[in-house]
Amino acid sequence: MGNMDNGPHIVSAFDEELMGIRAKLAEMGGLAEQMLSDAIEGVERRDIALCEQVIGRDRRLDRLEQETEEQVIRLIALRAPVASDLRLLVASMKMSTTLERVGDLSKSIARRGLDLSRDKPLPITASIARMGREAQRQLSEALDAFVSRDVEAAIAVWRRDVEIDALYNAVFRELITYMMEDPRTITLGSHGLFIAKNLERIGDHATHLAELTYYVAEGEPLTEERPRGPRGYGDGGTSSPAPQTDAGPDAGAESED
Amino acid sequence: MYDHNLAKSVVENDVKFQCEGVNVYYGESHAIKDVNVDLLDKTVTAFIGPSGCGKSTFLRCLNRMNDTIDICRVTGGMKLDGEDIYDRKVDPVQLRARVGMVFQKPNPFPKSIYDNVAYGPRIHGLTSKKSELDEIVESSLRKAAIWNEVKDRLHAPGTGLSGGQQQRLCIARAIATSPEVLLMDEPCSALDPIATAQVEELIDELRESFSVVIVTHSMQQAARVSQKTAFFHLGVMVEYDETTKIFTNPTDQRTQDYITGRFG
Image (cartoon, rainbow over all chains, first blue to last red; front, top):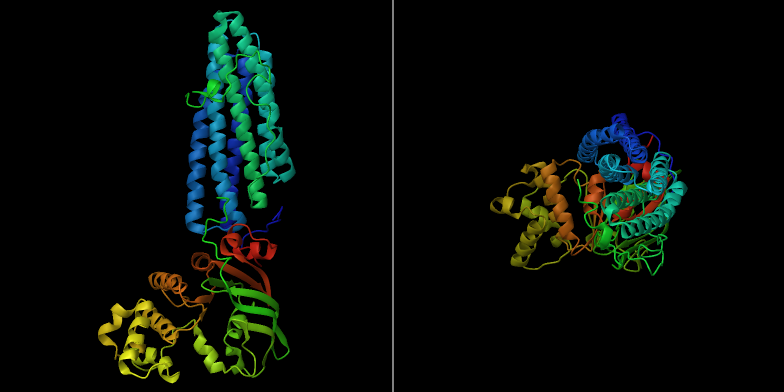
């Protein structure tokens, strides 16, 4: 039904409660963005203190997720929301879960940042940082699109995920090359791979946020076929030893922590 | 969360009532404005909308209850199974046996429980034998989910029952003539939540055999019992769609504002 301008509810307490949930989501969004950018900076600058800060902040995000969920359940029970209100609440619950996961992934990046900082510098940190900035941009634009109910901006984020995927493929190939050349870099390289994978997952979560924005505004799922990068991890490079299925570097990436 | 087809779809059900360009006037006032709607067989259709929006007026057109109001004038076409119910050949009393009605306040006749239910079959001459009538009374009371509560006192006055029981008695009375369509004008507004749940359960069962049209102020009730919902506002039927669609993603801003409590 497009971008509807919804006036206030007759029951003003309902509006206040919805505002409360939006405020929680805004705080979660801000926190997740901060954690991501600090984690990337921590990896890039080999900043142990910064990485530790990121790890410490995850608890706050977890608590916010729990509070948001409680408030949403309470509103569903007490106000029996329908139509746009219902869609907003369901999306809010999913959003808080998604943001909490972004926090987890950022924390995991920071953890690996700690290990990387204690070792000798990883040669491709710059590529990872570039990928990180792309993920950051996706996340922040997805959040902005949600706040302003900007469907066009949400679709733009949704389409752009293919860029992170391309960066991920490049980083993957680069790291594999290094590790093949010098097996002593395998430990470092593995950390790098997991960081890249986490950033790629954060990009997916940003895409999910964009889908939720679309659903809240339009009342329908974003069903169009999403653009996809080339399958596999080698950009078609046949000489690449990259695994041919998704199972390879994915395995365990999400289950850590 | 996205699939509107999860709810049992009723789109393939036959059309029971075909209404075209219906207008209703009370003297000078134009109460219903050009309503076009196909009400489906074996489907519960809910009419929702703010007070005075015309939903009850429209409901009453479906069995010509508005005939009893002198200044009321109905134009347009209303066809029950393809037959114009406002045709001169149609006897409104016969029509009302086919299109039964349950009102907001339970209104049992000041007669026994048995006679309340037997009244319709008797005046329409549906039975000749006492045993047949007994059967109709029992099956109607059973369908209305009140048989177990009244079977031992069928000859006690209907007015002596509780509000919820009286309403179910009135539903039993309405279905005793085996109507094809049952109109319900806020049937639960005088009932407590338990009695309301019983009536709602009943409505769902009645859908197996009849088409049910219910006017309700409770949006939750409309959402719970109906498969199709029509939203009325200022005499206009603003939106008519699958209930799931209306309550998750209505098309019209006025529907959206009303169901989310933003009117005014």
